[in-house]
Structures are given as structure tokens and as C-alpha cells.
Image (cartoon, rainbow, N blue to C red; front, side, top):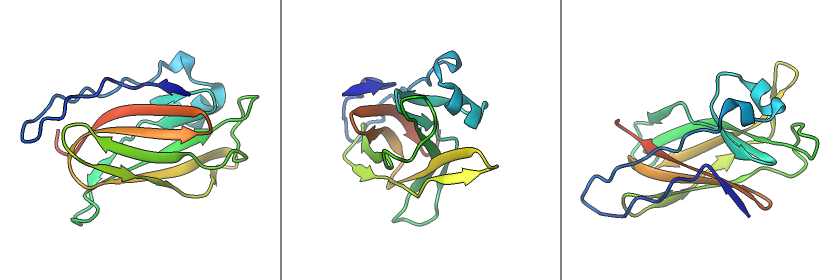
Length: 152
């Protein structure tokens, strides 16, 4: 199993705001061409056959049951570095680092736009603001990153 882009877990201290060190994205020069070509402005987390766009919008949904929602692209590659859906969609989950909580995310079917761009639309509904570690898994590849959800 390979984990890339993970930051150390912050200690769980209920009632106290813990520091949340967001994970830096992979340097642009290390991102595969098919992923970089998807959107050159996006920052990516990833390794091998699984690449995840850094969520740009963490919006409050206005619904208590949904809390905050992150939408982003996940890209899966074949052995030649081309986008593929043959391995299926990645599994998505998140664990809160500064208090109790976990949530599963979801992916839609492989989307296509502009005739060549393909990705798995990925959504996570975080029940509360806080420091969260998101983990995506595709086969033996695991990609993780930490981000602050909610008011900055």
C-alpha cells in the first residue's frame, strides 16, 4: 500500500482548537501529463494510478445534516498513464483529526467534457467544520491529504 501526501495527525483534543496543517500538493513537475492536462491550474495529490484535485470550494450547504461540502475531481490512470475507468471508482473517506467524526464520500460515474477530459466527480459532505484527513483508495494505491474545513 502506498500513501502519498499525508501529514501527521494532529492530536485529538476535544474542546481545543488544534493546529491543522494542510498537506502541500504534489509539485507540478511530478504530476503525470494526463492529469496535468486535465487542468493546469489545479493542485494535485496522488501517486501511481490515482490522482486527486485539491478541493477548491468547501462551502457551507445551509443544511445541518450536510454541514460543509467539498467537490473535486479524482482521476484514475492505466499502466501507460492514460485516464481510464477500468479499475472502477476510488473509495473515499475522511476522518476528523481535531475531534470525533468520520464520513464516507462518493463518486459519480466517469464524467467526460470537452471531448477528452475525463474524471470521477467526487463529493464529501463534512458534518462539521474542523481538521479532516481525506483518504482515497484505488486497489493498492492510497492517497491522503489533510485540510481545514469551514471558517479559516
